[in-house]
Amino acid sequence: MKKFLLAIPMAAMFLASCGSNDTALEENLDDIESFDAAVNSFADGNAKDPLGYFNGLLAEVIEVDVKFHEVDRLDEMNASVEEINNTLDSCLERMSQARVALELYRGKNWPRRAEFHDLTLEWFDVVEEIVTDYLRPLATAMSKPDEDLTDEDYDLYEEYGYANEDYVEVDGRWVAFQHTFADANDFKLGTNTVDVEALIEEELASE
Image (cartoon, rainbow, N blue to C red; front, top):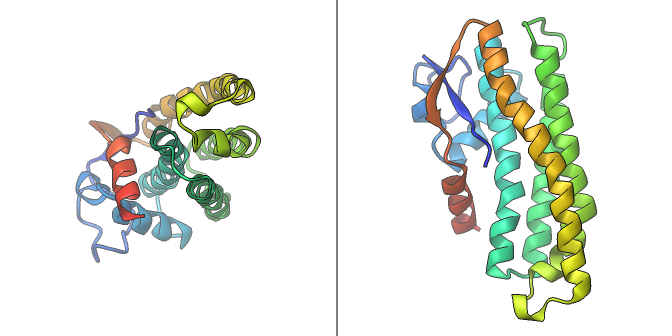
């Protein structure tokens, strides 16, 4: 699972849900509603400096990542094809909205922003390809108990496994670049990480 690091000391981006920007990011981004608020703020162009940009970008990517990995949980649960496809639709929709939000900051000359922008788009592209070309065709297989899987189903899973290697590679570069961007813009990343698994559980419980 991706190692999302929280920025310190304070979040510069206004979070619509809390009415103030003087609350530490560790306290703000702790549940799905908080991430939704951060994403909405970022999409409204409220990131005014590199730290605010990082916080917004982090929230955007985490929201996509939660939906992307939620499919694995649905697979374990043998959820319905409809539920799996709805989750895939939501993942693609969140990526589309995030791409639009990123364009709001294209003119900012913050150090290494352009590289972070392009790397995030690359990450989105890889996730979108896996969702469209591999997870969507696997929806029926994921809804079946293991004992009902066919040879064709196993072949699809194997293809997905190979494709997921591309995700792991770009994901690793994205994680590493968090530090590069923070160092270039004179803020630090904390040691606290975002519990994506907990966010997935919360998302599943709310559906």
